[in-house]
Image 1 (cartoon, rainbow, N blue to C red):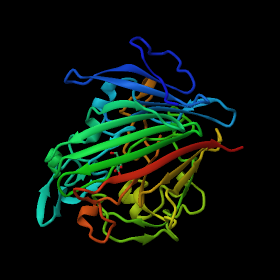
Image 2: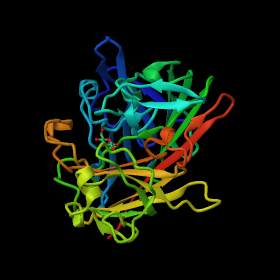
Image 3: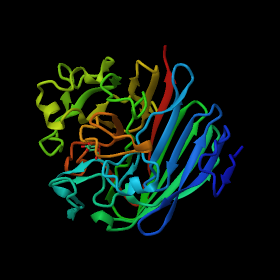
Length: 372
Ligand code: BGC
């Protein structure tokens, strides 16, 4: 049974019915375009609010061990915060997630030049990435919960990338308390694609201080060390014996200030982990995070080969989010499932090329539960 879309003009603040989706105005972009907030509520009242500005996840309310719902992502109260946001809070990232070294790459013998929006490099798609686009939103039926489809046409040459790229992202809030994200794309010219979501999580809530007490497990035997511009060197390094070994659940803060070259380069964790994919599995477990005070648990499952574990090292308190909360250093973490940064310039990394006639499809699931 399809869910009903209730379009209400003055619906802000109205509590959504379980098993429904509600659309409310979220403000206007600087160009005067109106954008909306879609609040998906599953059968048990778990709620994901998503705006079609940048396809950003604005809030995500999940239960703690006592069943109390609480928001676990950073975000803003209206579109203005997202327009001015340089930290990609909650956003869909494209055309290429994370960095491309020296803001250029070669494809089919031709050099493509991109914007240098992060030192000498390109970060998260360039000056106006998919996080700053207004997406076309449509509520679609889902068997297992509430779903929102977002589409965007990234034109040939946009931010320097070749090919008209038709992108479709489906967010599904399942009745099993998971936020599932399906990413699809097709192109009419050879191009490179790496799509992800940049939600910043704090499982104790966005106003609860730093995330150093969260317990992290990452299913990775190797990571991709970086240079001073945070571009992978090309090496796949064993995590064994380094602060990057999260194969056994470990506190995020346990080794974050250690005297390690890679930790220093990242100012903490800001690295791509090479996921241990299980052959034959559609989606594999990438990470499991637990928060001892609230008992909240988040598992990340994905079809992707990598995940960027970023500990909010560049948050400096200058961003004020929902309810005026100041987002301070390490007050949230990201687990951005992805292909490895700078893959277009690293022939040994799994390829990010997409050709006409091929269909890009990846899936990532953020699954919530609790433990005692
Ligand atoms: C990058 C960080 C960056 C952050 C926000 C992460 O994906 O790896 O270096 O600061 O996004 O832009």
